[in-house]
Amino acid sequence: MKKKLVLIDGHSILNRAFYGVPDLTNAKGFHTNAIYGFLNILFKILEEEKPNYLAVAFDVKAPTFRHEMYAEYKGTRKPMPDELRVQLPIIKDLLKQMNITTIEIPEIEADDIVGSISRKFNEEFILVSGDKDLLQLVNDNTTVWLTQKGISNVLKVDENVLMEEFKIKPYQVIEMKAIMGDSSDNIPGVVGIGKVGAE
Image (cartoon, rainbow, N blue to C red; front, side):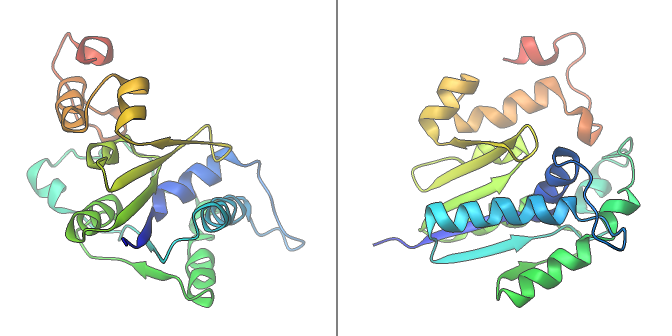
């Protein structure tokens, strides 16, 4: 019987939580909304899926191999707000206290780590992210929990849902992104086509 592994794109979920949960602070004025939202998603996964293994991947603040290929990669993205930055070490420490493995690899983004692990083993995977790029990994063994509208709504995407919601197959995710581009990563698409034409 296949084991169930949950892999979380840590920075993606923290960002979703930070912007999706109202600003919360403790008695000393320390911001806690990203921590609260992240843990809500984590506990939801543990309760619903009861995985055999769980790990959280985080980005490392350094240029990646994509920056070497395209210098303007993520060039328009704003720096992490200080209110979120201070919460990052706290969530990492909490995960350590919970004996949850965290993974960080220089020059490799968290979603690349998650995707690579899901392709290395023949087990059942749940990938948790707000990044639609991971939808290209959906197959018989892999489901993507795509966070939407902050943390209040999660779309569980298998191959059937991918076709119903996005009208594409997993291998077409790459083609669609190449045509339409990705403004969040500052990647230009094909001029004159855009999202509608790509779909």
